[in-house]
Image 1 (cartoon, rainbow, N blue to C red):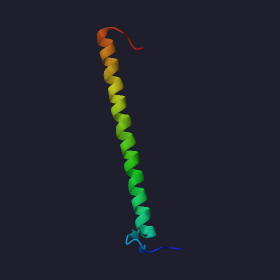
Image 2: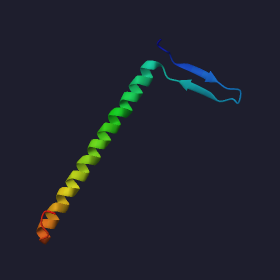
Image 3: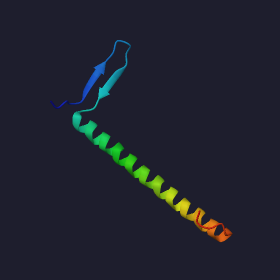
Image 4: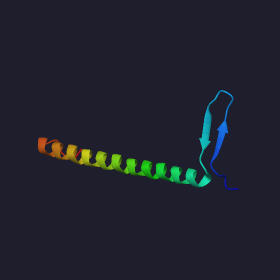
Length: 65
């Protein structure tokens, strides 16, 4: 069953607009892709920082450990 966009009205006066299945699927995929990209960027930054720390240790003469 494919749901279309629909509006839900409440007695308190608030209205909610719910997305269709297609819109929901696209939105979920967008946030999933964004999360993966963010994790990759964070991992890359950590890796570069560790490499920089290792170079500093070598220069100071403290070796690889």
